[in-house]
Amino acid sequence: MRIPVYRLKVDYLTRYSDFNPLLLFAQKYEFTPKEQCPLRVCYANAVILVEEGRGTLRLDGEEHALQPGSLVYIAAGRPHQWISDEKRLMVHRCAYFDWKYVHRPEFHYQRDYFKPVDRPFMEERASSLPGLQLHQVMKVNNVGLWLSYFNAFTQPPSLLGVRSPIESLQYNAAFQTFLYHFLSTAARQDAWGDPRIVQILEKIDSSPLEKSEAELYLWAKELGLGRSRFHQLFKEQTGHTPNEYIQRRRLYQTADDLCATNLSITEIAHKYNYSSIHYFSKAFRSVMGVSPSEFRLKHRLM
Image (cartoon, rainbow, N blue to C red; front, side, top):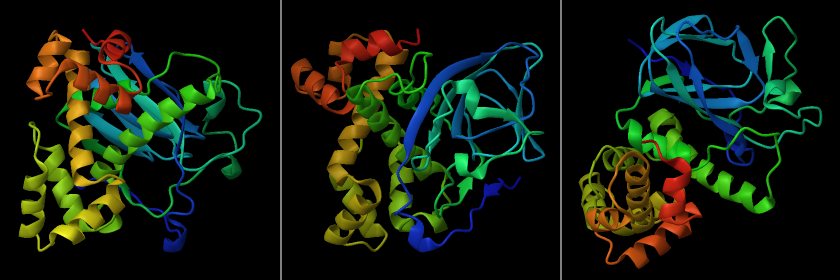
């Protein structure tokens, strides 16, 4: 079955100048059995992960069967409706965001972003995706890893914007890291950078164990990329050197274990080959903004 793709026809030259993603709100939502929302549109863009349960998504007039690991992108202004299974909860992780800043002084609550399809949609209240083509509905296998991404920026229910500047930076830093992983997965290879780098990133993200920087250079050589050219392209497309990317991925795997296992922090540090719990805690805080124990307390799944 062909995966539908959301195509945006914009000038290629505006792709990067208009690209400044901003997290608005993120939450965990549980649909009760048989629950369904009304057909609606949203002024924010959304990425939703189905954590557990099953259901149906009606999007742009098409129906998509959902299951754990379904990863969905809904652009602002697209009519959609969620319908839960008749017998089980359908649990979502949701991130609502703008591709660039939009001034909405009259929007004070999350509900202000949603409207029935029978009301006029004001285009000036929404931001569109500059120059990329994204799959709308996909399936990811490592649900735990994706949950750890969401956990890093999921917020308690509150008024919009009630965060300190430091908290905003923390949530948006975590969100933009997540968004990079999402775009690497959802963007068509012919629309997002050098396909050889995309291929290497897919190999990294599909590998359950940590990879070494040397392995990445070997993969690059197999694809006809010399060491310096690979290093340059990799940093241009990810914002990190190969070694930085590997180390961050290792930390995201530790975050997954903190949320979803009963391993002690010492055991997790040993599992991922950190020389000491002190070094592990320092590295974790530098990326996640909190210590491993604080992260576990806040985002525990078990």
